[in-house]
Length: 210
Image 1 (tube, helix red, strand yellow):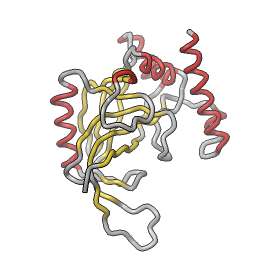
Image 2: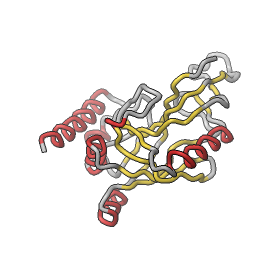
Image 3: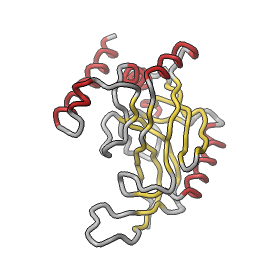
Image 4: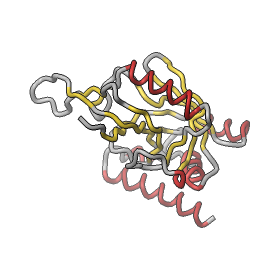
């Protein structure tokens, strides 16, 4: 089976206090949180074996992170190559906390990074996703299961971690503090999605207008 592009999401909680302290102390925005999770079925029905994810995290740390080129993009990339024109952040380090792969992320001063920074500061819900190439195998499931479990095979290759404004996977958001009440009231509804997307668009337009 040929490799396919695998994109998966994980919750990444960031508080407004962390955002404010980082900007005050570092002059830039640096956030910490869970990037991926091993041995657990995610919202897409995939399981990443710990040995496979550990190997890829180790390789990623030794090459991309050590050479300061662990770049990620803003929004939903559909390529196996990181587009430098859309680079918004850089992974500074990764480590394990149980089965959680935890990382430190620096938001860059690029155009996409400035948008990402303003979205964080404004309390917008943001998702984070891992992007990689690999194949999967379906595991045995009970009859009638609408979300069959698949295991990511040993040929998986980690490419990047990206931020997205509207993940297709429910519940996979980074949340930098309390959300706007109208968004919270509309979670899971078209109204909530519209309020969220309109607020994101307004912030981006404000940045471009200066």
